[in-house]
Image (cartoon, rainbow, N blue to C red; front, side):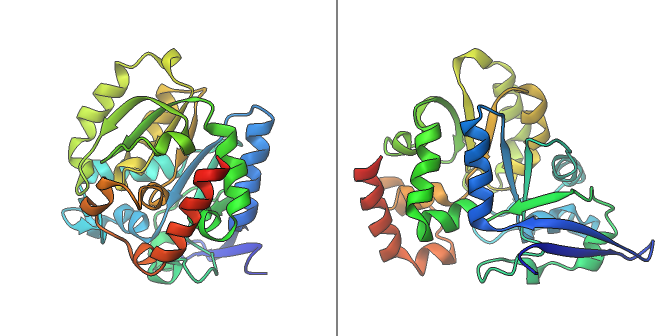
Length: 272
């Protein structure tokens, strides 16, 4: 039952709002189905740090383990605005209600989140779907990649390695952001985005930390026909054998699974 639903209690109204939770495999399958039907799909990931950034008490504080960002009131509101977008093609990935061992749901106070009056989406998706399928369901991950790696991509991250094109398609535009406190250049990134010819690329792939969720609504409005994939640390795993890997902060799930990640990358190298 936990895999099917998460119940978030509205403290003020004394009522229960139920959101249907979609597990990791079914999240990726839903994305694949949309792509096969040539439908737009946007998948954003909201983990524990993102819910912290939504809380007023975190304004003026650094949030995050690897890609720490200083949270301003403007950034706080933008993360909430992105989360609150309602559309059938907008797949909100969340850690809340996810019983998976790698979920960070236990770090989040549901009572505090309930006070934010966030949109109660009819259905939510897993925020760790791509990461888990990369490691545990390689053939499903390959199926996803084969649907996007023949397209032109706008890529946003702190690094860009040639191997990424095997997974994400030809990188027509690369916007480099800092590895930490990437939200500090929010305005510069939005300005750069505004100057791009939307006909010059097909999709957007991001591994830009909190900045991804800060610019979510901007991307949604600026490029209304583009698919958007918030792949997070999947990019870090893909570049495990590349030069840039030595320059990035390694998250626990990467440190603890380094041998498996290298095995997967070797497999993907022949399959894609």
